[in-house]
Length: 257
Image 1: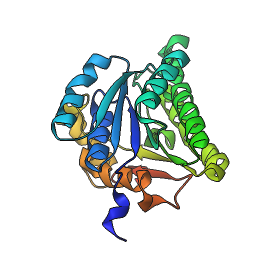
Image 2 (image 1 turned 135 degrees about the vertical axis):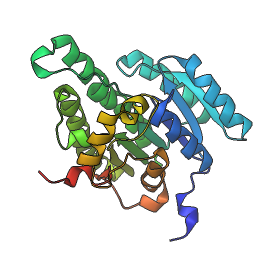
Image 3 (image 1 turned 90 degrees about the vertical axis):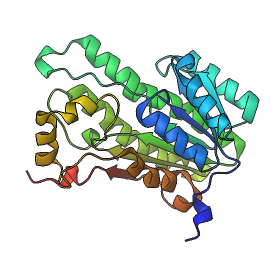
Image 4 (image 1 turned 180 degrees about the vertical axis):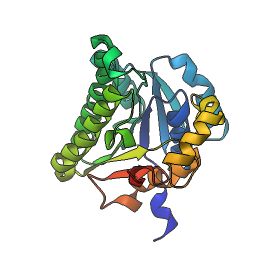
């Protein structure tokens, strides 16, 4: 397969939760592949440094304020993007929260906050994006960021696992209905990757023991190891892939019970 099929020139990509971690990394990868990137997060000022970095490298980037729990905020963000660059070609639906709470200690507020952001928010953004892609006639690609906890479960994360399992099923249902509109919908289910949020824990003895025991490759993932899966699903290289959930986890899902 020719390398050019992984390129994203003349395509507009929106990445939610782009102010840090996976979202910021995804934005850099898509911009390097040639896409015009729209960085979305609740606090637009936190996005400006990344916009400045990308534009200094000759990339096209803009920031929009978006709260995925608020339909008016989502609509305003899409309107701003469409006024500048037209309909989206690519959505990376990444915004989410983590809030470990034991089941017996969980409040309804914990539960609702998790589902409103990680599942309802994913639906809200994907629904608006898919409507625009269908109207454009060009189709597009939607990549939902799920988790291996949408396929298995973990202690203290019942609400997170339920939300991500919903994202997995949402991905498959959307793929079924939107294929005729030339919209591909897939999900990436990451395992444990080193980010700013978890680096201290995984540098500790307890964190290292957990990874050594639970992950067959006996290490954390590095962010660049998500680049290939992302570009495959985003570009023409994955033109016949829809409804797939791609686990990128060092074998964590297939560890021995």
